[in-house]
Image (tube, rainbow, N blue to C red; front, side, top):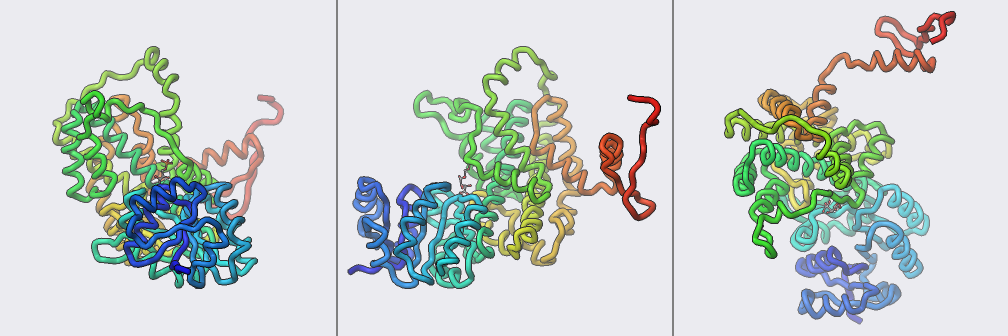
Length: 475
Ligand code: 6PG
């Protein structure tokens, strides 16, 4: 019987691309999918002549795999992962490795790890970023699970992964259990922030400054040559150039302004609240998508509620440069929040995350790949215990140089009535983070006033409560 180095369950778009990637790198793949038509189309189409064949049952899959067996699940996150696991485990043997390459919720991965580990099976929750193209030509991968499972997967994952400019593979063992999916979740939170901040700058340059799509494309292309160089800036420049095939008009102007979401950004915010990680920019990005969904309400409101007159009087080139600087400073701040969240989570969940390695594997293949990640990596190289990216010397300087422009752009948004939830939140986070005394003293006083919640003092130790109101005078 023909043997395979790895099994792949779920031959959807991502599964097919990953199978082709593995085969191109010299691994024989056995695929399993319930949809026979899809399998045949794949085998006779894209996979023709490749080292890919299909099996029709979990039992046959186990029979054709080299041991320890490696099986990658590429099925939709949620109950489908549990059914796929349940369909396979009866045929698996101790030491075999099951990998979930979907965008699973990290606590589901924790639960599945515990269940499989009790049976002597290895379970790897692996974040995969880069979309269809990335999966085919080199994704960034974030596997979490047993070290032995990582060792058995390392050669194949390294071969498949994207390579950074220095040739380093964009995959590393993230840590135990759900850590890989956790890191992928935060990657997506940063992705939401990046995308929203770019959208806000687009709004400001388009509606505020009046740049055409052509001009916007040029601006973003130029920005992609400098410190903002990144995949998201690159595709943004492309998007503004695309004309609609049906009407010949710029496609961007015809797309409905309601942003959808599958949920990973929302999970990032939800979990940040649970573990006490301040990530206002990511939260603002999630909120912005939700707000965009109120299309009908917004259309009605626009007829009744007026704002300021939109006109920019600043020199065009100066304004564009300020927008660039504001975006860059906000981006640093958003990454500081995401990395800060990882630092807190690492302790909370005992993940022992290596932030330098995480920045390193995000430099290519994934959606947030960016020049900036080299600097993030360097910052953690200099100081592995860095408490916050904003405390790194190079980033302090980078923001210092752009602070004035950053403030001018947030002010411009306010004056023009153009919402900048994410960029504004980045600046507010930055200002809060560098503030020695925040007004939380008043919050504490109020809590103590109405609820006797107590407070601490700056001039002596202990917990205090004050009878704030005169008890004889009811309020
Ligand atoms: C990636 C992407 C990928 C997917 C997002 C889209 O890293 O390759 O993040 O995982 O495109 O899940 O998420 P939304 O539908 O929530 O925007």
